[in-house]
Length: 575
Image 1 (tube, rainbow, N blue to C red):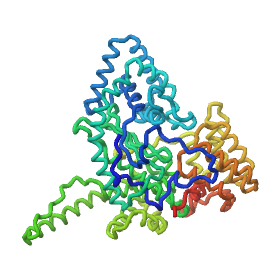
Image 2 (cartoon, rainbow, N blue to C red):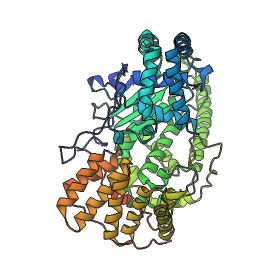
Image 3 (cartoon, rainbow, N blue to C red):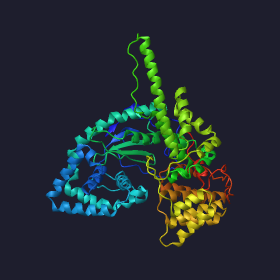
Image 4 (cartoon, rainbow, N blue to C red):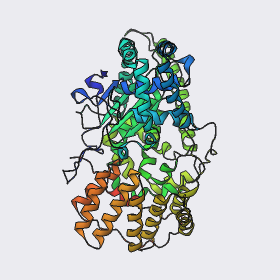
């Protein structure tokens, strides 16, 4: 494990907030689960290895996971060969391997990236071997990992039979050597990013940015995820050049770590930005960004930041050495720098334009604002408020409408394109677009189907009930959702909605019970925790219950799902 230098351990500035910044009024609630990694000294930014992740990766490799094998660091082939040697001399080991592989084949997903991701998610919440058990209940595990949690008894038997613990110990020095190769470039990236953002050094605030290194995985893939206040990037070093990782993808996760709290702390400005969601309904981006203005805004700001600090692939001219450089040399240098800056800006602008065609419609706006921030030498923390609150929303909506989005599944799209919406997800989209009848038809169809997703159908119906001013029906549907759902976010928000409904009645005692129940679910998203905590602090006061229909006027704020209300309960800036 490597703790980055103190100068690189910069969390968000003191005025930002996150899912762990503001303790709940009800202090009896246990803290949300953390991934099973050491965190010595309260370090905010660390580079680590993980023995449970090694066990998971070793099992996958033994069962045909060969992705990017030729490009991997040599240690991957060496460990595979040693596992094969153990298998060659032990029939019991071969039998446990075959049983493990049978399970992995039966639970394989068509998407290879998602197939690997479910095992990585599981590894993050495992205790060290030999126990190798989940550190949280199944309801608290990442949803994708619950599909493969029953692999653990098979993995433990396989690990025992091929002596994985001995392999881990014997190759500890190899892992440390690879970690050392990654350490300096990672530190350089963190420091340069913080310098650009103008983020001051701050103490550990409960949030963590972890880079986990595992050479048995494919070096072409960076597995990044955000669980509550843990921001994780799982990387595998390449063989040539040895130790190289996709630092741009790691930086993307680090930018989420730094920028998201700044965006979420400006929740009061989000209501007026809701019309922007209408402009991206046909964009090739994931559903979350089409329905969550805070997520869309944060991603656009991150994209704009990446455009400013990207490697443009040009050789920068070197200033002539010496104080007494000749005027002709200085003039030539100035000319070369002007040409370099023009070419570099053109490359950055092309990147911004591509980002906007992919659906990140505010990238251009933030790119301009960040350029002005650079010239004024101020920090993002000091400037982000003006960026968000000072936005001319009508102007940005008009600009977004002029964008010709890339088609779904375009090869130019760097990140995964969303699948065609069907079923309840299609009903959600219809609700967002104001087609309440269409959404209700889909929900009722799902409820009538014995194999339908009844939990999500009731959740959709409950919100439609609210929009049509039918609180009694909404209460019944939210209660039905809670009885049927296992999804933490759906459960938590059902309790929050019920708490708000009871506050309106008013029945404060029942409302408080619902807010506490929402916190007990431990959904990892910051808006969930903040909304429940705010409900405990003071009764909910609705801005207005009447939402029978939505105007087709494009200037009408798009808020059929209560997102504006949710955003209003995210944490305010710390004082």
